[in-house]
Image (tube, rainbow, N blue to C red; front, side, top):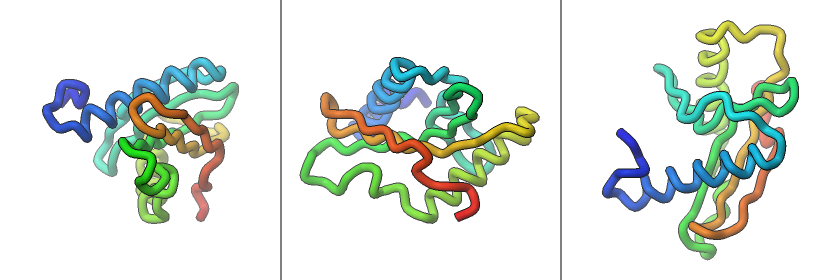
Length: 125
């Protein structure tokens, strides 16, 4: 389902946040490889390249500034799921001998600031 056309406001907010995050990353030198990369283990919001590094990006947003910071919602369990999903993506795309990184982009409200957390977590943790 195209989340940008969903009736659910959370889906629209999430799709808008992903659009804004992708634009932000491109403006900061990243190249978007794939959006909403899905496999049997889950979904990666954005797969990108930052120079020679392959980056798996989790995008988080909140509609109101009084809510918990979006980056704080990437729990250890969520990190583990992202890592598993990313490794499955790499296997499917025959990615080998490449530096991998896990970034988080926090989008603070529909028109708010964007914060990039490079190397937000590691695969081995």
